[in-house]
Structures are given as C-alpha cells and as structure tokens.
Image (tube, rainbow, N blue to C red; front, side, top):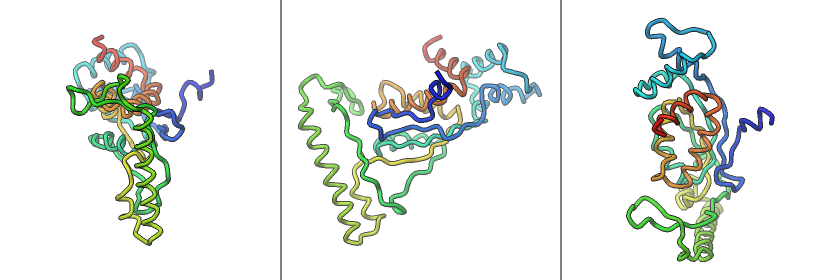
Length: 234
C-alpha cells in the first residue's frame, strides 16, 4: 500500500462520484498541541513526540483544556448537497467558510438523489428511520426527480429571460450541490464530529463528518486515538 492509498486526499461520502471531501492543506501535528500546552511554563521543545507527550494530550482532552488544540488548521474543500451544507455551517466557532456564489456564477446541474428513502421517526421530529417496507421507493424517487428537474429548469428559464443570477437562484432545490472551503482547528473539528457524527444527526451529514475525520486522523493520530478512547468510555 502506498502513502497515497493510506491517506487519500479525496473521499466520496455519498458514493455518487459528485459529493466529496478533499484535504486541501493542514498545519500542525500532535507535537504542536503539546508545545502549545507546555509554553505556559516554558517547556516546549523540538524533541520527537514521546510517551509523556501522549499522556499530556490524554490529560488535556479528559479535563477539557481546549486551547492547545487550536494552534493548527485543516482545510477541506467540500462538495455537498445544500441541505448538508446548512447542517455544517451552523458550527462557526473556530471555523472559517467560503462558498461558491450563485450571484457570480451559474449553478451547475448537479443534484443529489438518495439511494434509498427513509421514514420519519415516530418519536423524534428531527430524526429518520430506515424504511420498513411500507415506503414506495420508486414513487418517492420519481417525485424527487420531477421536483428537482422542474426547479432547475425554472432556474435556467429565468436566466434565459434575462433575470439576474442572484434572483434566479431563489428557485433552486436544497438537493443541489454546493461547494465550499471549510477551515477548522482541531478543537473545532472534534466538536463538530461530536455533534455531526452522532446517532441523532442527519445520516448524510454523518457521512461527511466521518470522511473529514478519516482525512484528519492520520495527521493527528494521538489526539484522535485519545479522543476516541474518551468518547468510548476508555
């Protein structure tokens, strides 16, 4: 296995070849976390990460000393359905975002269609459950496709009529793909993962969160190992 195989730069969470998470750049590592913590008493160093450093990372996470995890950055380019993006953009603490603008460019005909439709959870207004066989999947897929194609067709017709892009985009569906640059520090990313790779989060958003974690974990392996152990009760 090559290094590229071990740490791919782009993942496709939805499996449709359109939605993707790409690692654009990263700054920092586990040692940077340790040095940020130890600077308070002048103990930072260029020495390789050792067992004592790993214990410190564990201590910082367990006792919620978050600031040492902020001296780094991970930038992703994320192409996702608008409804997924709107779940992600709520997390702005320690996160920077720039998104493609429908004012400046004509939006592409890129739409997400669920491979399977889910049912509304009976006891949770914001959650879904797997189809128990009572959903007409074919009918749902037909309605979905008719709706987004009609909406995108209306958008194109408005442009043809000369309507400005900033107004015409108002008819576009939430299933259309958008693309953004997101930059996190490790503290903000771990917080995001706790909320968006959670059983109560929307399934498609969870897939994106997992892809982001998969790309970042090799860059901060000790931090992620200790964070996962903490959240597993270890």
